[in-house]
Length: 207
Image (cartoon, rainbow, N blue to C red):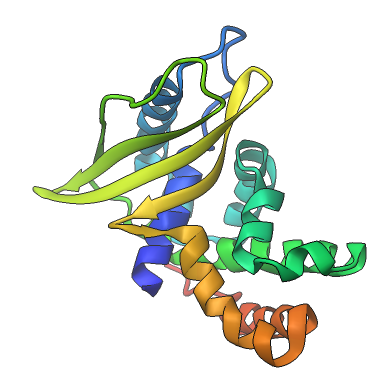
């Protein structure tokens, strides 16, 4: 499961590194195809990212990933019903530790970028829909990994709010991981548990 979450985190980065979208809005599948193609090429030539440079990854997340993700929706969905009852301070702290969790996961996941290619499958659903699933496959040396993206239209672009890798949705996977801490001590217990986990994984090995 950790490997799957790492790959899922990687795909968020793959979809977020490219330049700003053109003024004319893209279809959801074209959005995925364009960004993933551009970013795979960039990552394959960036030795610092491949080496897990945490400072560079943090800058990448802050400037490129977050604008392409509805992170509040993703966090709230992963926490579940207790999110709605959390105070503004708790929500802010939860967003911070969940973001750090994903950043630390990227550090290992980005080193896996080697010779992958992405095949975007035909889009299901009408062009006027505001929420769509874009289905893709990532191929490496003949092996195929299922990657599906839940996207929502936001003004003239799309934002990611969940990812399915190999049949497991990222939000569902985190919700399952978070349930024990939430049951034992509420959202504060979850925040503290994630903060401790982040401390233990904040310094990936350097190449």
